[in-house]
Image (cartoon, rainbow, N blue to C red; front, side, top):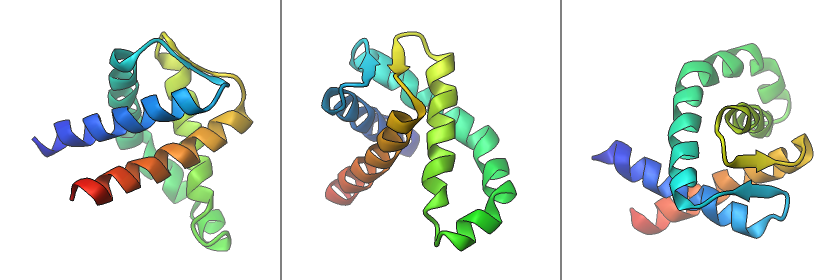
Length: 111
């Protein structure tokens, strides 16, 4: 049940950021759910590897490099999911930051 709630919260964050930023194109909320599931799977499979490989950069930037890792994972998701498009890596970095921020705020409000 917690997994479904996490996917729903992430889907809302993705959909809201897509509505907010003009460079992110998404078909609808159903596509946002698919993006959330694919992003979660990619994060589960590759996130730890990227984290370990970039640990020195994460330490040097006091954790801010994790947003770059999230942007790379979001970029991979962009390439995998039909109906989800981000117009450039700069926008992907902004979107990753806003999705993480909004996801945290929604979780704070719910819990």
